[in-house]
Every structure is written in structure tokens, then in C-alpha cells.
Image (cartoon, rainbow, N blue to C red):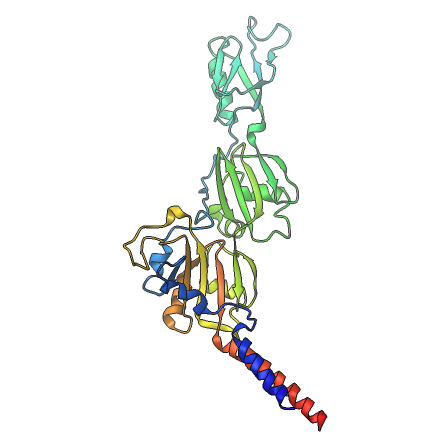
Length: 376
């Protein structure tokens, strides 16, 4: 009956090399660097070259968020194009051109501030009032009236037009168009007026659209620094959306999944921590890999036979390798930045495959012994 055990051992000996694994072996990937015509580049990351690698072209996004400073506006509202202005002229002269003998005031029809910033005053002509506060505009109109009505007094009222509103497009409880009550109205005030950032948004990003330009910042960063709470302008559009940057964790990592960026930048060490580190029983700490794709325009020519360039990648596909069993590799992983769409791969140690084979052998031997015992 021992032929059962012998047969089992023979089968396992033939199939041990193809036992299913949870991840690739480092030798299967890194051996490409020894090829005469490698299809991808392999770079070992160390403290000596990590600064140079950080200077390589950024992939997956722009590399940083572009945001505006926070200039303080005037304390009073400014008149803008599109605002509606109502003017009342008081004149007690008997022969006034504006008032009649019964009433000493003349109420002019509401006027829209033109694209050039002007309004039209009878007997005076156009008067520019854009970018003036309401008191300054009233004084300027009254001064212009002195030629036709030296003793006239002007009363001015301003109603905000569409140019003095900002649109809160999405990502909040109550999106819509909101008037700007003052020139000191900030982006956080607008978000608060819209009911705040909608619950459930993962890693929200605040996006400001102004004059054909797009500015972005992480919501947590905006709320943490008062100097970033920029002042809005009429016509601004604000969108709150999820940060769509991600990297992929595979192999002998704590979790295999698509992982969103939890901050503006992540190092290789932080990325591993985000997914629960490496598997103690499976991971090959000498070969933790980061896989990255570069546009062909970002590759750099190098002398034939070179396997590294400080200026950029030699090929479109690059594998960055870390040895986390050494202090050199650990410090390098703390400074190497992960790019969006990178793949962090925990390779599997050869010992794990051996354990799998031995476990299967042990199972077969155990079953064979049980069969032998029953036969006896």
C-alpha cells in the first residue's frame, strides 16, 4: 500500500514548479534586466539615487495642485458690470432740468452697468462707476451733475447682477448660484452656504474655475490653512469632487485593491502602510516593486548598454525595486514618491512556494498513512 505515497510524491515532484502562488517571484520579474534586449527597465532604488528618481517626469497627474493666494478685498462691495443702479437726483432749483415745479426729485429708470463700466446720466453723458464702492460712485455722479445742477444731491442704490454671484456646482448639499454679499466673501463661506461638503465623498477635492483657468486643492488642506481660503469673484464656479487619483496594490501586500490617494503625495512606505503592510508569511522583503508607465516622450536616450539615467527613464515601462531588509532600502522607500496609477507589488518569497509544496506532500502522506491504517 505504500505505492500510494510513492505515487503521490512522484506527482508532486513533477508539478512543484507549477504550484499556484499568490504573487510573482522577484526572480521572474527582475531577470529581465539581464536580457540582451529588455522590454522594460529595472531600477534599484537606494538613498544615493532616490533624489534623482524623484526629479523624473511625473506620471498620472500634474504633480501638484495649483491654488490661488488669499488677497483681501475692500470692505465695501464694488460695482461690477451687470449690476443694476437706481439714481434719484434731488434739486431744489426753480428752473431745474431734472425736477418739475411740484417735486424736487427726479427718479431715473434703473440702469445696467455696461460692459465698459458706464451708466448714462441725462444732460451729463456716460459716467464710469465700475470697480467703485457705492459711496464713491454716488460722489462721482454728483460731481458730474454740478455743471447742470450745481446744488443737486444724488441718491444711489445698487442691486447685484449676475456678475456678482458665484456658482456652487456640485459636491455639496445645496448646489446653486449664490450672490456675493461682499468683496470679502471666501470660498469656504460659499461652501458653507451650500450646506457643506456632501457626506460620503472620499478624499474631497475643491476645484475653482475662473477666467478659463482651473485651480484645485484638497478640502482638508483648504480648511486647515486660513491663508488658502481665497476670496471669490463674480462669475466664479466651484466644484467639490472626489480625488480620482489611485494606485494599485497587488501580490503579498496586506490588501490587494485599488487604493485612493489619502493625501496630496504618498511615499512608497506610506503606500505600503495604507494597505496594511506586507504579508509576514509570504512577502519577499528584498524585492518590493513599483511598476510605472511613462509616455514615450519622457524617455531619454542614453549610451548603448546603460541601465540607468539620472535624467529620466530609458524605456516606457519601468520597475523600481526596493530591498526592505536593509536600512538603505527602508530610507529610500520613505522618500520615493508613488505616482497615480502606479502598481505596488509585493513579490513572493521562494520559501513560501516550498512551504506550499511541503504542505501538499504532507497532506498526501497523511492521507496515505490513514489508508494504510484502515487496510491493516
